[in-house]
Image (cartoon, rainbow, N blue to C red; front, side):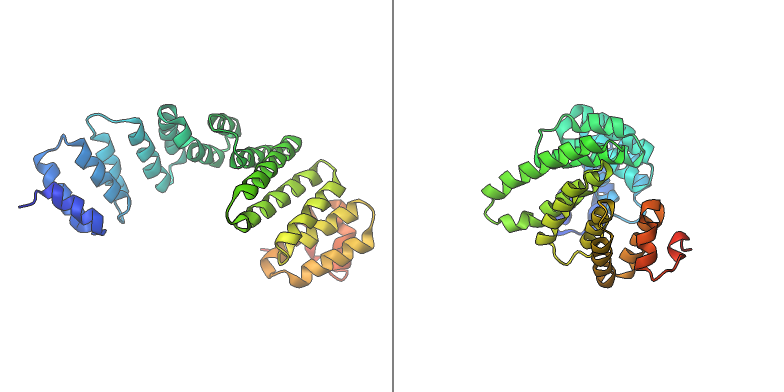
Length: 278
């Protein structure tokens, strides 16, 4: 004869959440101070429709909450859209297990606009290429583009080393292309247009079907005074782009007066690009 707790564990192994929840309810009715069973029920409730409030109530009912429970509370609150509450919970979890919760805590902080604390949260992690990429993204968000360039460069150096050691280095190609594009964007913001173009060109060698790349390259040529080549590249990009990417191009061209002459030539003399679409 199996106990309700044993049945719940078996049901969880087979993914039968409703049956597991019923068995856990029975067990906790008899043993309300069993934190192990209550944590199992929390995990079940998180994945069930309408279960988040009950999961929070179970978290409040734990006899001896731990740092991991704070992380679990953060998950629940994030699912509920309570990002300030989630940040508070993940802060507690991060203090107990800094390397385990650093990335999640940083992402929630960025959602709240607290890039300074996000950088502090990530500082506990080893400086892998991913760590440099996260830091670069944050510095780019803060408008500190030179620092972003430095971290993207370190990320690319780390990726090069990882690719040299990988059994299937091509699996990392898309990641390398993404880092090259992001560094190119940051280089554009600090006025290093030739270096930005070199990054975009290298990315195009990896992802030749990305229509945004010739558009970005066109902007580098425009800002270096080569209008004809800029227009040729942007026309190539426009012809390959879907409507969503075309709208992004319109927005970028409208945002900077330096691009308006190019926009008029690209769009056939239309000034529609200057007006946001509803």
